Length: 154
Image 1 (tube, rainbow, N blue to C red):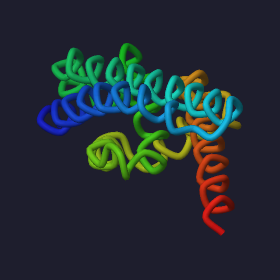
Image 2: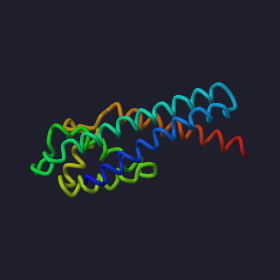
Image 3: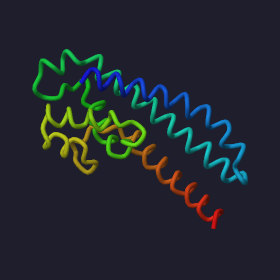
Image 4: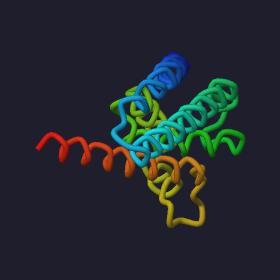
């Protein structure tokens, strides 16, 4: 688990730097002000997501000893773990280590934990809601940008 979390952290840091550099050039090629604004906002949300993922991975690494001692998910790291589990399927293309972490957590805490604690409708849900909103916004806006590209090429 430690190596996977460290690898995820390294990839997230790299993606943050890469995306920040691309953000400068992507607005230059935008066709109009609306598209430029959408690209900036989308990049901003993605960078915010990377910051959250980074803090969640750090939290997991900082609490490894507690996690190894306890069978149940420790309260100190519950938000980080459930948030990484929730984000993993959506972000597997960019950060595949999140899916590996999800599988590790699922094996350690059980499928019931994963399904109950990451269900946004559940009162026990511990997923970071700011992350959920940023994920939703980012992927909706990214789809809009892709649709504009397709329409422009037709």
